Length: 178
Image 1: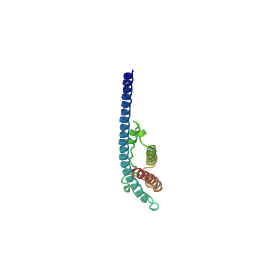
Image 2: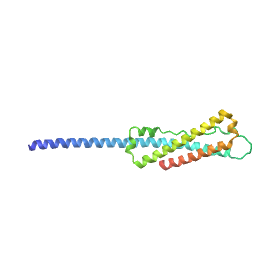
Image 3: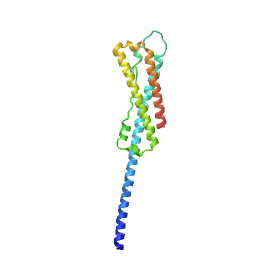
Image 4: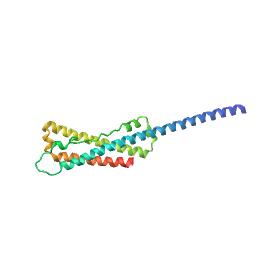
């Protein structure tokens, strides 16, 4: 009877140890997956930051062009080498990929919340770019290029709004990445 009891205890101990080892292995895998996801997100945000910085610099420069105050003068389209607006190309694929397998569940909640807010900020920026693009295309379609050239105030408003939103994004990128 004692022998059977010890054999059963060893079997139970073996099962418990195997379960603990499996749990440890799974936990290590989950942590490694979370680290890899965070690394990809950081790379993506750094690339986004560079793109937004270029756009912010362009919009700040073009804001000076559109607000220089020359009365009754149309804008020279040659001054807009990258277009009337030059929106940043921002990506969210690393964030979306990390969300799918649940890698975010293995990151601290505060970090995930900060990242979520940052990506929401990017989405708001993209919505603003879309709205501005629609206005520009509608103006071009209805009034031709002169509809934009002869309305520097409207273009200045777009540049100011985009530059402001880009400055906010750059601050959020720096807060997270630096």
